[in-house]
Image (tube, rainbow, N blue to C red; front, side, top):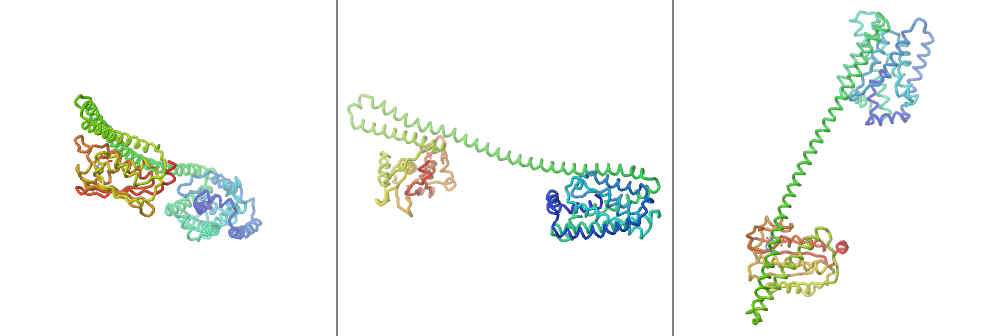
Length: 518
Ligand code: ADP
């Protein structure tokens, strides 16, 4: 198609070429039909009336040649680039407008113009006839203007401005009709469509059509002076150059797109690399902590075992056989070291089960006061340092007794450990809003504010050096936090260096369903 191509980008209006094609397939709304009919009918009638008076024998093969030329050029698919399509049938139409009278030029345009969609029956019949008719009208206007100004034999300084006048008239008629049609079809204003038609590169668009008008002059003069073959020789390289030009621009765009994609992918890779290296750093830190943990745990295991072996050896000595008081004292020390060992191993087992999500819970009735008494007694000789202020009206809990006991013993163990030898600590509790709230308060060494956020991390110890004062594997508080969560609760700490710490645990009276299932 020729002039109609000028506005082809307008038909992409809905958003994309595909949606426009779909809009084409469904015959346009009814309001475009009257526009189509009101152009086609009078134009057809006028052309038929004009055809009546034409002496066809005087036309010769020229008209047929131009019909074939326009059809052939139109059927070569043009790669669209940024919505600009350069129509080469346009200069032929301008040549035709210069060579023939308006009705003959109109007839050549209406017969010659074709479209690949038309041949594939992808466009409704009425729409195809409309396309051809509006093109014919544009060529008729161009021819009318040109013949008003001069004829094809005029000198070039008259010919060129007249051809430009014809081009402007043809272009204006075509643009207005295409815009009107698209505006009605997609319910837009004509101004909006016209702006869209010339949108992305208006200057390039205009220059290309003025250039094509000059080609029209050349085609008309070549035809008159050299014959049809010269037009073919002129057009063939032009068509080839056009194909190459658009193809290369499409390729350049595609390359630019791929370049952008590659840049984006490179950025993503760099981002992933940064994340990866952060993960590696984390893993390295974890590895370091695990190594440290193994050293700490080995030390923690060796100390009571060495002590126990020492006590056992001492007890075997004959002088102890007759001293029941000393025997009793050593046996008690042996038991205490054994309990310490059991506590540590239990902590390790619980931590490992928590980590692998295999910690089973057995919910039962728990009298908190009883559990506190039992746990305090389990602290051995240090039990006397614990002041218990648990009221006896705490409702019966439905939770896991053993796990709650581990929370209590870990907190009490820390409170005693991080306080001076003779200092006491308090274990208190109250019922609050349907929850059990209990706390372990000491007047010990306290915790630096910047350490508070880290003490609940697994393996973390404020002082993990080999010369540290306090025993421990860095597992106690992480387990307290995990167990409290497991039983549906939470733990908080308030502490100041040198002024002691208070660890407060809040638990529901009834362990939640998922914890029970867990
Ligand atoms: P650890 O086996 O070292 O006691 P925890 O996980 O129980 O490990 O505690 C982590 C760290 O928190 C300890 O190394 C200690 O520095 C600090 N901490 C815990 N409880 C107390 C407390 N009651 N008073 C002061 N510091 C405490």
